[in-house]
Image 1: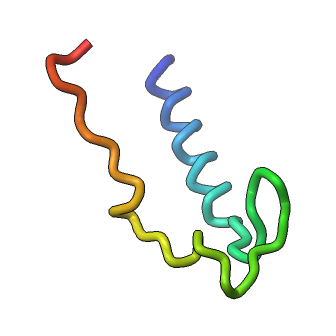
Image 2: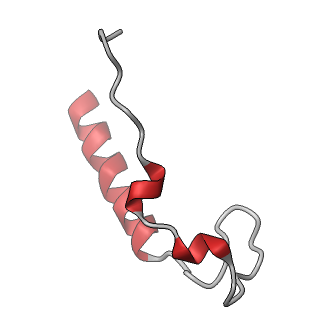
Image 3: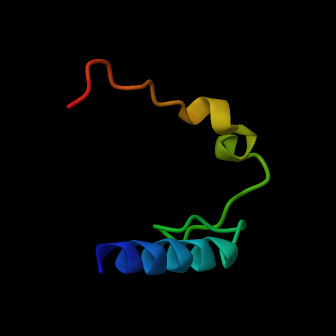
Length: 55
């Protein structure tokens, strides 16, 4: 049952990501400007180092 719920959650998250508007911030709904520094960010700027030693 948990597996089905996880699959549905992943599908739902992918569907929401597909509807993303790139001209506005998703949380504040503020409009993005052409000189907005966030537009220059890449995936390397969001690197999260792996946890050492586990939980």
